Length: 440
Image (cartoon, rainbow, N blue to C red; front, side, top):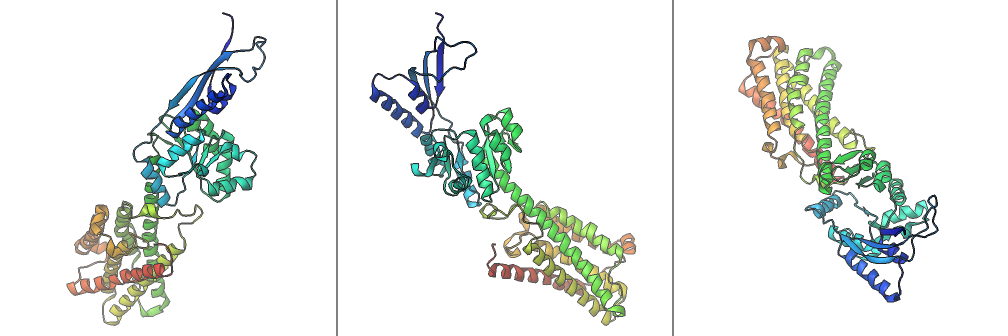
């Protein structure tokens, strides 16, 4: 009655080794049963019990249990959520390499990885025992070759994260347990499970998802790409048109007394704060481009003003400024008053903005393949910006402030035709960009 009993649960291969076996083949039979359960995708625990050493004092560290009586296996299954396999496939299409890193039995890991499409043979599963005492270079080689890692201890998970970072990867780690915390902390982005995760994992992570669903992470990647794209689109619109206005005024000054001041300061403010401002806000609501999850990830060190952005900005600014100065010079040479020429030039720049915002909707795809009705915010934003300027041309108060006036239908058509030149120039640049072998 005073005997102390020891109860053990753990990995089958460890617990079976601690048990007493009168029949040697019986142990192998139980080991085969455990592997069958693992092959069905179950997490398997072995359970055993036995007597503690009688000579053990209260302050002594107990030795590893031995001569236990085997009691059985417990098989637990956590089925894949609907859509997870598709989410993993989306990651592959998006250039994101997905690896499974787990403490489960290699057979269990292989069964689950088969469902996910990560591995289909035991040779593709790397165990923690194989990684023991590996050098940094050998761990980096394992990252290059393996996609499924099983029976890993927390330290090995951390080593794999550091090896992937040494290979130049931007690493995200998902986890929910205490043993995931070191890897979550070391990753570039640690993602913890908010519903079933431990407090330690949530504290170590950078991001916590509330539904514990891997597909949510993939959806977050997509939304992040949409947000980044839209930031670039808005910046491109504002900077290219702003640079065009600066260049236009500079060119007018460069020719000396031949041309009067093309635009008043208040007219420049009107362009930037009102018409361009309305369009910029509308462009921020642009929906995702087709195939956004089929693009390769950008480098974390890539600036917003990369080569493509700089080229596009220069092309648009030069075309808008060049056509604007040429039109202003023609109007002055043909007897238009400075007020008439400036009013028409202001209208031309507003129309340039309306046309150019179509160029901004995609960096590489033609504006002709994107329906203007796909983004109601943008469609009505463009119409609203044009309506506001038309109102300024017909409202006495705004006419006085902006020095605007109504123009003839012939002038409207001429200015609209000139504004289309920025569309033609950007379509040509997109074609040349693709022709040079750059990604679309």
